[in-house]
Image 1 (tube, rainbow, N blue to C red):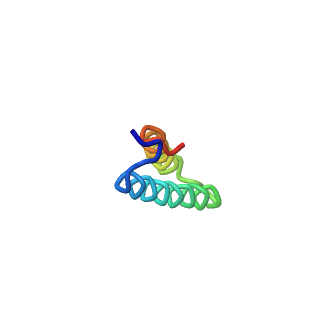
Image 2 (image 1 turned 120 degrees about the vertical axis):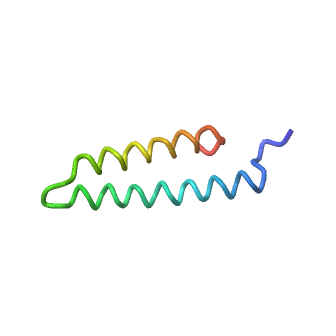
Length: 61
């Protein structure tokens, strides 16, 4: 068994990391609003955590 992820897993990890970074940018943008939407922030953060969990599960800490 290899210590390296399969090409499929590597592509999936890259996709997850990209999506995670986009969500981080959205969170940052929302925080910069004059009146941040707390419900939107909660949803974005929850999605970010879900992605982070999947990244870790796939071995891409």
